[in-house]
Length: 365
Ligand SMILES: Cc1ncc(COP(=O)(O)O)c(C=O)c1O
Image 1 (cartoon, rainbow, N blue to C red):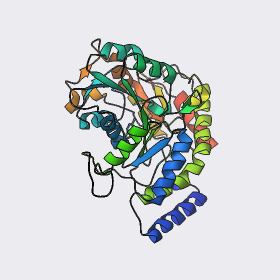
Image 2 (spheres, rainbow, N blue to C red; image 1 turned 90 degrees about the vertical axis):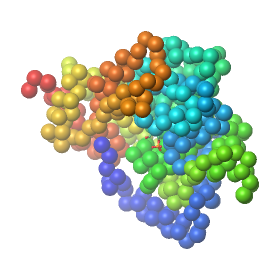
Image 3 (cartoon, rainbow, N blue to C red; image 1 turned 180 degrees about the vertical axis):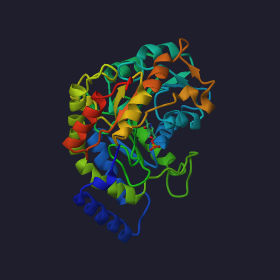
Image 4 (cartoon, rainbow, N blue to C red; image 1 turned 180 degrees about the horizontal axis):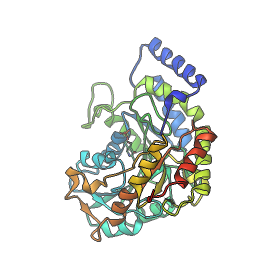
């Protein structure tokens, strides 16, 4: 699904230089490398501010704290996401409420969210799942109309745009993860918050660092979630390749969309606009998913399931509030989805091999 060892010599050399620079600087946490990467990432995201944090999950939690969303408040999100999205809401002390997804994109369904709204609803955490942003203008108006905050979980959507604006421009803020497998990945954990709200930006920078305002003064109860210099320096190097890598992901996805044709396997819908999807994952669905995965395995093609267990079937979440009509589309998607290889280091031969393997699948063999 990923092979970091295929990263070019050029990147490896630049990363080594960056690491040496940090070692020589004698400054390792929240310093000039972090500040410089924060500027670059805010520019990339077309937001006024960005705040480097420890990981993508903390980014969501800190945004919620910064907006005073906590105990007694409900936050609506999707059961088809990384557990971290919901864990961040729980850690903020708020109550997650799960809405169902659309069957053709696996993104959150606005109709279902509407059914989940109560007088206690304070926010929606919208996940740009698999790398796709969709109808963010509608989500923004929807949340404004209901007087709730829109928070964007952009952990999978680096460089995706809607109406030319990247994730984090439609809600109060966006939360990015730089976990190594993400489209922009560090050599360890990392995350960042982007926003154009000055107050939120100030609160979030204080919260990530023990709630400190100036040295040794702590007006807020914060946490320790700081981006370190080494990761920031690595991210600055890798950022230069992100656009090219994203173009390659889109090219591969384009070939899959066009050429995967098998009565037992379906592609998700093509995005409404080419720039709105960055294909962090390329997902197909099949009623015979497990047999399809075994068939691919048999041809030495890796695949993964994102996600096999919807959030409401996880042990701590069995009683979680949810759409009163149920979450059947999420359950069906979890039973049928399969992520097939889609990463920038794949050769044309690799892509063709995947297409041939998927097309030759039959559950009856
Ligand atoms: C949709 C989504 N949200 C949040 C996260 C959390 O990011 P991190 O692993 O950096 O905490 C991830 C990554 O696993 C993710 O895929």
